[in-house]
Structure formats: C-alpha cells, structure tokens
Image 1 (cartoon, rainbow, N blue to C red):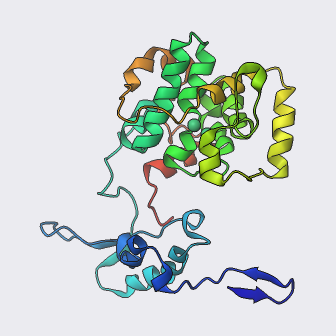
Image 2: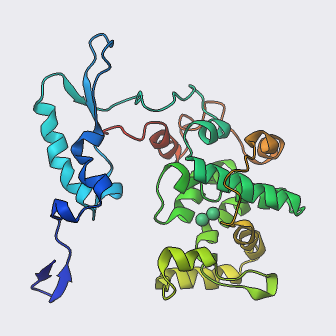
Length: 277
Ligand SMILES: [Fe+2]
Ligand SMILES: [Fe+2]
C-alpha cells in the first residue's frame, strides 16, 4: 500500500508482489489469455484474449494487459475476434434457450431454473415465474456488479415491463427484510459480505421507492424465491418453462443480438465475450 498524498488515504498499489497472489493466479500469468493454435489447424494463429476492464480493474490481472498487448509482436499472433473455439458455437438466430444452454454458467443456470421452479410450484403468476427465471441473467454471462439493472436492461424489450421492473428491483430488495411476507435478510449475504455490511445510499433509496410501488410484491416474490440453499445436484430443465417463456418472452425473429434493439449489443457481448472490440 502507498499513501495518496492529496488525501492522506491509503490507496492500493497496482503492483502486487507475485508471492502475495493466490497460487492459482500466480501460476496462471498471461498464458491464461493466449490460445495456442491446435497442432492440426491449417494456418492456425495464436489468439490473444484481452480481458474486459470491468473484470480486471483493481486486480493484479489488470497489469497483465500490457504483457498481452506485447504478445502481438510475436509472429502469427492476433487478438481474439469472432468465435472463440473454447466456447460452444451459438446458432445464427439465438433464442433465450440457447443462452441458457450454451452461455450461462452452471451455477447461475441452475439457480435461476430452481427459483422459477419453486415459484411455479407455489402457484405464483407467470410474471413472477418469468422474473425468477431471468433475475440473475446478467450474473450468468455478462457482469455481476449492479446485476439487477444490467439484467433488467437485457430483457426489457422482450418482456412485460413489470417483469423487467421486478428483475431490476430485486437487487435492492434482497438487502432488506420484510417479515410481513416472510422474507428475512439472507444468511448467504452474511457469509458473502460480512455481518456488518450496509449497502450504499442509492440502494437504500431504491428499496424505499420500490416498497411504495404498485409492483412491489412482484419483485419481492423474486427475492422470496431467490434461495441459495438449493440442491446443486437437482437438474431443472429449461424445457419445463418453454410454454411460459413462449407466452412471456417476445423472442425476436432475427435472434437475440441481431434484432437492432437498444440492447442487442449486450446479447452479442455474451455471444462473443472475448472479442478485442
Ligand atoms: Fe440477484
Ligand atoms: Fe438470485
């Protein structure tokens, strides 16, 4: 740590001595972002992945960017653009089901499917079930920080506004108990953030405004079904929700990412997450 002379506050150094890094990262180095051509590839080139700033800034990995750029000086080396061979190829006109199947990480997929299943078993309405199914879509394949807002933005053109609203507000509502409907502060958050964690002021304000909103219970029900004590081994099939999705998600004919909507670029980012630009 060094000291910021203007404010006298300690600021983290960008250089973390390698011996202080966890072993898994220490041994990884820039190599994790360089894809060597397969032996049998004709005219194969090395492809360098530049990890997005949002994923690396504030971490030692951010320092690897200069090293990765320097890799381009190596013959037959280019930045990753287009399909990353490490990822399953997406169809030309991807549907929500394709993203669930081919892009969402296992934990998020299972978590959202199980939340939706519980909501369905409790006999809740389709808007609530749909919001449960989509509530952590941003975490699943885009970005975690501010995930309620990113998630709502992703789905807003395709769902009823009440569903998008519920996805957006669940992020703030999660931090505040409402014992009158049986929602307590999540045990998981104590483990995740520490018992003394207090969310920022804007989250407090969002919660207070959401509580006075006519759609409050739609989003609150997302938080009630947003459990972490789910059975990681239990597989819920997306097919179980195909009817509900068909009625509540306006799948664009051109495919998610290619319909020219204001959020198409966000879906494309999930199709090609490793593109340099
Ligand atoms: Fe969430
Ligand atoms: Fe969740």
